[in-house]
Length: 424
Image (tube, rainbow, N blue to C red; front, top):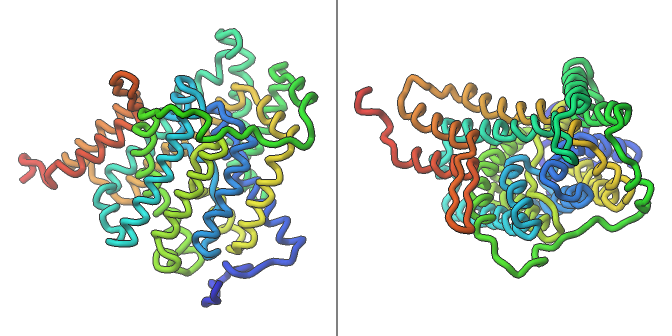
């Protein structure tokens, strides 16, 4: 690693290593910041949370290796792929999900090669704000039905239960409270605190069974599930998830821009966007090999860096090592899996809405003008097709609504004229 001009106002800059006791505490803070969302994805999809924690740690270390330790970015479970992963998990099991996750990584690597050859301007042309904003909104809002079901229906009996409804609302209220009134370290982990609070209420209402926790060992290998568990090819998995990789790539660009701003560096130039994309892609490929969900750089951890003024890659690397070690605590994985749907649904009301609001923020920040027909004709179908889950089924092939919305958004952006005939 080469020395560079120090970032203004940094307590610990990118290459600076804090003393061990402080390094441990700062790394633990990043671990807690990513923990709630990283664990929530596998719980919603039906994957093993221990494997997801392991994947996030290994993926982060691989990203650091490929970017030569120059970028303080943490990799966590991506919400962009929850809908197709959930559908694939129910229909075909993890081998299909693994192939989808693998295909996401391959798309990242292909885009990284193209960027290395011709630059990244073409990405902005394919994904202007009028496309990206609505797609991100769809990713969040398409999960609304799942959150509502979790927050009202007992999965064992498939019946409505008022106590599940109450626990979900209490979880939502707690998450909102922590977001609004806590600051400092506690203000950085409101989702995790919301899950913990909801879990306590779930115990009080008799929704938690600790039998699996009592039977679990303290040390246990995560429930790894290989990409090669099945020799069958699942084309629908690839068709569902691969297009969404282009959306998370645009999200990746945004994260790098924020990191550039807070650290006073230009990571697009050094180590280069091709390296950062390759790091993300390799992290997802690694996740597919062990049974984890697709991963992506986490805004939560960027927020922690922005607030703490600690940009050290040593701290991020420490959080990744802690995540890997934590994934081997068998009782923790068993405990996470006892979190009832009421809690997942309650925190989902907030988290999925935040994702949708992030899409709205993209539209607002870029001043997308909906008095122009072109923008309206692109965004409107994306929203309805994605949220309504207008899926395409061709035999064993299936495109989810989110994937369809992404593809149609890209096509409309490429074929529609810049100005409608009636506006000339």
